[in-house]
Length: 268
Length: 295
Image (tube, rainbow over all chains, first blue to last red):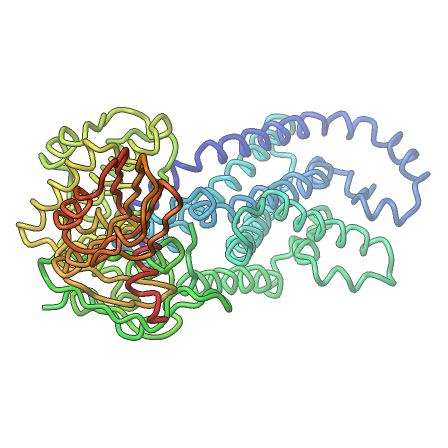
């Protein structure tokens, strides 16, 4: 671990963090502010939703039962903000934090300083997870502040914390995936395109596989299956197998990143 | 004591040859030249020494430490100057040098101001605003600031104007007098001749010769162009040391090896010379003559 590099990485990536976090906090506050309107017009919405085929409702996560309480309504959107957009933020960030040294030709400077390859990965990974933690904390705080503002204490705190916890697991996993695949990519390839594509593909696979029993098995290839929690029915998904899936896969990807980078030829 | 040593050092990029069975020995306190044409394997050797890339086989050591296993320890005492310099955006020169110094656990000292003055580096300018020559000067400062015991320089004068080149050589000599070992890579033979005591010549990934500069000077080669008012006869130019002679009417061209005074004396015997130019041939031409047959 090298603290000089760690602090430098925090400084280098603060604008990215501020932009993404502010954007999602604004989305969340806006969404929470719409929740009272949805609750008021719930009956009309129910009639409207009945017109949709079941499979389509499953694809878009429209569950009338879920819309019976404030958190249920909000949670439908949280999947999109924290898991999908958060996933894109995490994977593109993960893909850039190590590979940008090669892409911007600064690797020659960094790797000729007295530090080991493992120290480079450790310092950058810690800086990355510092921001991922702060990002999820900011998101969940804004959900709590928003719901408290509009509904006082009339929502399930455990449900909110559970959403935040899974957000952290999701973004950690996608970030670790980004760290790993950036070392396999050729120099000059855009991490934004590849990273966004990967998150969207896994999201779409999960969404469509939910719609039909025939292709339901496809959900197993997507992390979205493992983070699928139902806050309305009081099922928060704190099962060990879910936790093991996220933590195990994240740890494995990080270990592989260390192993690969220790032996990687650096071209500038 | 050998500061840099390589044994059968080999690097392949897939099927492409980088360097093959490279054996080098650089003694403590010497300025060692490493010359070869572009693509010969100079940068591959250097990048292996500073552990940016890993050898396919063979080994290399600096201060007796393995360049792969003990890279961190080696880098504490090594100053590396790359051929082309790239730095982080949005930093001033001083911020970059402070950032670099922190890796060595040593704060910036008086040496910074002295070197900045010698190389006319403006410490508060943003790196993004610097020309490639000015970035190179920053790289020189950054390479010297932590008082390294060995300097590994890859085409170090690339992008420097003649005045800065002269100052750079002066600094190198001064560092060397204080015991610093210098590994100086270049594709310009005259540059290496100017400062080094010994030189290794690399061609197509292999070291073809390690020579004392003095013996290389004896072999020094010049390209001579001659124009006369009257047609030149080939027999007039059949002098000792003349090679690759080509005569076309009033013009003649040849390579000459050896002391220059005997050549000038012989040429002065010729009548009606209108124009005479003597220049250093390209490194490729020198290799063709001295080392071409060895491959």
